[in-house]
Length: 115
Length: 111
Image 1 (tube, rainbow over the protein chains, first blue to last red):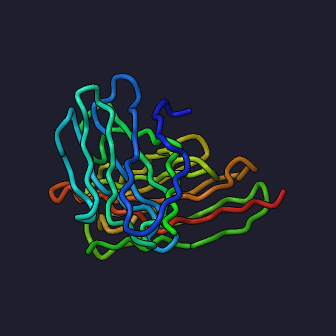
Image 2: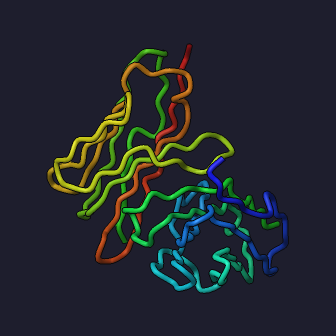
């Protein structure tokens, strides 16, 4: 158990819909990262927040957005969903905000299925 | 965009054998990371490399940051059943704040 929690564990929805994935970082961690893992694209870094502010941006689509709240939990919003958005979405957290240097602890993931 | 070529894609070995996998790229990276992912779990960081030529060990695992900064390898010695899983490399381009992952190497061990 990494100490990072993600909800829900599974999500099934239809094309065109909007969903929100939630992540609670480990106690004391200020950074939250979001990743997408799909069969064809592999593991992709989406975005990082540090203490409420966006710190780094990866391959995040414009239909996707994220935020980190004052209590440090984060939400990833996916809108106008397409079949290709079906994937495992991981959240990770770290103490510091330096991408690649601070050890990231991954949550168990949310499996999104778009029908 | 930056691409990482990870090979092999899969390996089937006998328990006790040594394992070697690598990642190469046409881009230069400032940091190399190696992760392991068990089924149904998120990736777990195994080794982080920060300097060209750096060789770092973590138990039976050894990883090296290539001199050209365009490649890295991971070796596992005397494999055991719990080594089964998918291993990912990741490279960081510091200035660009880009973290790129390889496609993974799926390791299967026959007892």
